[in-house]
Image 1: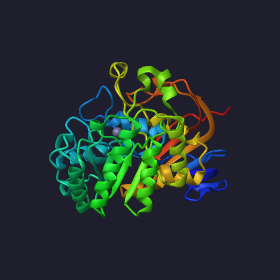
Image 2: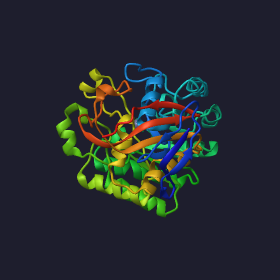
Image 3: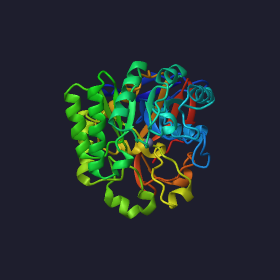
Image 4: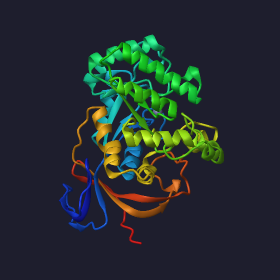
Length: 380
Ligand SMILES: [Zn+2]
């Protein structure tokens, strides 16, 4: 398919309009004046709930939702039922991905059952295809256990992802700083292990990560679209729909995250897509739907094109050692739309952005040489 007059997002920003050939079977050439072609975005942090929680999401509904949202590669967390803590579970999940519209990679658990006690077999998980290790929201390990985990993961050549929180410390800003300090101390003891801090939400954690990076530690970090946009004031207005872990923070924390993203202290934007069924959400479950609003929310942050490319295309893949393949999204940067959760392809409609007017929308997603989703072009 030949796209005429399209601007292309790359490492140095947006190109001038020109003609680009995209491998997409049986598609006619088209005039793409005013549109932006970007390599597909990668989401480093998603809960696809499969196996175990089909009322919330499945691999297929999650992958379809991600494709519609503009993600062509997603990293699925291990807190499923059963937990992804054995090589054969990674293999059977990977075997199911060939039929999906986008690429999905899998995280293996750090400890059996995410219980924080017995380390999984990092090398076996890696040979089965896991690209990182994480115990997800259940960061129950103390510093010694974390140090052992970092060592085992480093020997297997895998990064360890940690949620910037420790259940036993609560979820206030000080608890986040304490959890990050503990993780960075463990990392310092276990160089050259690699640590990735998930959903950083506070200025304190940003400063700790900045200092660790300037000390040369192999640490990377991500922030979510919601923490980059919303604050505790929004949470108060959202009722149960504002429940998320870590919680929405102060305007000062949000501003610190944005600045850290611009400076590269925060490497990547990741959604922490955490779909819930209506009953669970109304009963107070933590977490937000992330896939179908992320591109628009990120474009609304006013970042330079170069930083958007780094945070959403290149750094996420570098962090888990995955190459960009034949993956493209076509964005209409001027399309305005209203977030209607009932139109989501995900089973989770638990978005904090319901009813919001957003600007910028993915109108086509191409993966493995196939157009996997396409929205009718809206010309205002
Ligand atoms: Zn998570």
